Image (cartoon, rainbow, N blue to C red; front, side):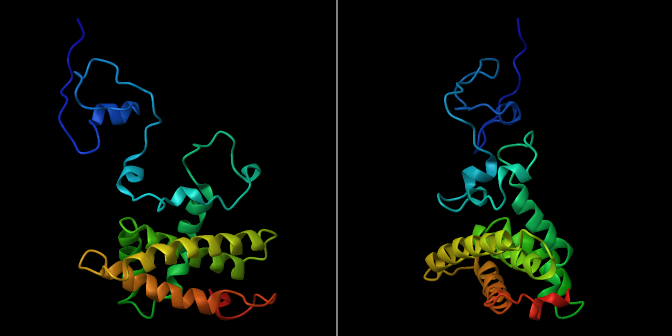
Length: 197
């Protein structure tokens, strides 16, 4: 006889079913196999409204990615987030007091607000396009436009519903959009404003 594992209620399924990546309706005993009729979404995918997921933009051809990589992992977006954490945030930093805001707090806020995450990724893509002499420059610019469009679409939808939970993210995106607008190349010459970092 199999031992019964504890099976506590949770908002997004039990931890055992999450670990096994199976669908859990939390009505079966833990030792029974849950149905696997639908692909299981990650916790972050469940908590986001439709149309606001970050995985919809794939800036690079599949040939640029490792074929053995997790299909739910967008390496292009991870590269852009790394760019933000390593240098792009400095474009918005004025001094030592604002450094932790843009380096730490804004990305933390972006985890709860996809529109801000898209804005961060858009600005990072523009920053890469301006600072690297890379054959993928047009791809980075296209990625920047796609992320910026998603950011602004979500942002516009919230303009009539600014509240305590989204105020910081809305303000941060407003600042990011200004830098994006000045940094996005409007001519073939990509040297300029953001090339200092």
